[in-house]
Image (tube, rainbow, N blue to C red):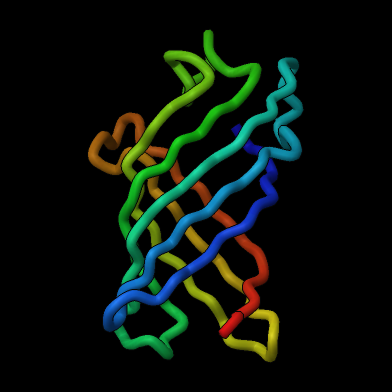
Amino acid sequence: MQEGRVGAQASVGLAGVFEFYPAFNLFVRDWAGSAIPKSGWQALVSLRARPLGLDSPWYVGAGFTTIDVEGAGVGDPIFRGGSSQDYPVLLTGIRIPVRWARPIIEIQLLDPTHPDRMQVHVFTGLAVRLR
């Protein structure tokens, strides 16, 4: 699957270099031109850390994600058992501090403990820091 997604995320500072990181995305388009139109959502909850310090743009994390896609199921290599799947997730990313809007690039590895089923999802976007 190659969908575009739009969504929101937050990072809430905890103790030291750790952050609580929830995110929610809606699928907006199937870029591969599938005969079966897909729509759905992804929810993610994870704990992130900034190993190089709070001012570092780089982060790593681990958590859990649920993806629910209408039109998935039979013959779909990702959603073999139906439209909703739950995965452990490892993630890493960078948030580049450029003025008020910070470009972000994030890579998520879904189901990393099973290399034959592992998926790589890449996200780009803009972050805004609120204090």
